[in-house]
Length: 329
Image (cartoon, rainbow, N blue to C red):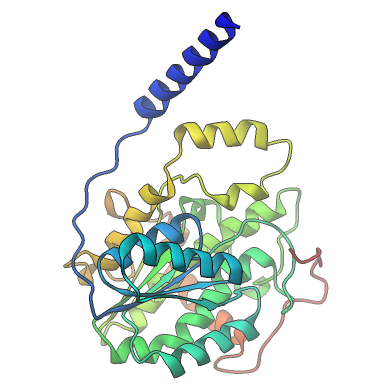
């Protein structure tokens, strides 16, 4: 028994040394006071979203947790109110896998909330599947749902300017291969879900780029960002054979959600970022995305196709009937 305890102790000590030796400590941040400002955080009940919402509430903002699960959303809002002493934190239902839900959320928000200064498009999934609207799950949740939400709330953001839209993208955009004529269909191949995720992250980067171009004469600015490699619930969708390798590495090397939230908060609150609207940020500041992420023609084509797919600016055009239809998640 003594040897077993000693071995466990040595392993824990080794783990601690590796964890702190291989990961750099997050830079300290000073955040501005946000009293009187209203923020929406999608996916705000867990992970990076919850950490972002917590810090915004600490700064005095009124924070709306826009999330799908009511029990988790209400619990997260209550926890943040208790921890921060800020009573201006509430849950509102939003399911990005349903364009009907996105429209209902926007209608309710605009009716109940007179102000909007920060829109944090954070929620994301990596699992495959098909939504009730007939689109691939990752592409709709990660891009199309957020695209529609942003468009529906854009006039409120303009009227409350200066305001910001922050889109949580990923370095996975480097592997994105968007084709506007086939948007919303799961790509073919063995790694379809992974490619779909990468495509959606490229769409995030291009969405920010084109939104900034279209809003350059307003007080709305937009930023896409990579939060770093963060240990979140996103990994629950990893293949079973990969989890024994991936999960220990995630605990050992990846950032905590509160650390990953720092880049989100920088883009949302740091002074002087207006000239960088449309840019892609990491922990090191504004960076050049991969070549497809700075293709202005592709950004415009994505915007126009996204408008059609969600029923804005013309008739809705659904995905091809030949698209695979995996069970919804």
